[in-house]
Amino acid sequence: MLKDTDKPLCKLKKTQLQKLLPEIAADLPNCRYICRKCARVAHSKRHLCKPQSINLLGLQAEED
Image 1 (spheres, one colour):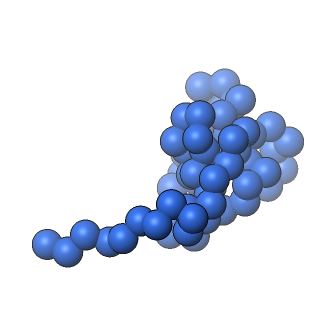
Image 2: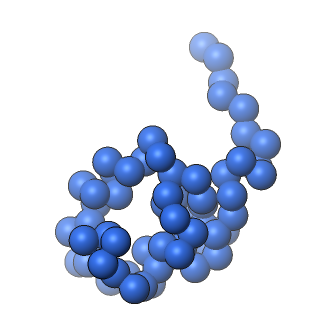
Image 3: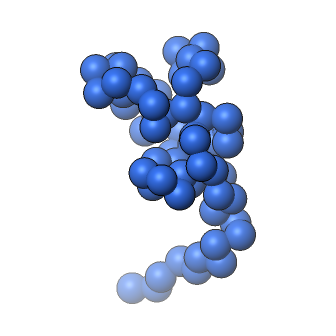
């Protein structure tokens, strides 16, 4: 269903987003972009209104 939506995640209504949460959660390990507006993450930048590549942020995994 996420692939069928033309709207970015940031523009979805709360009810629409609730229905998509399982699919979004399943895609989390594959996320490559973060929205600079709302901090949502997605695999494709077309699903975000202000996408930023996560790789360009220079994040490093923390060690416990």
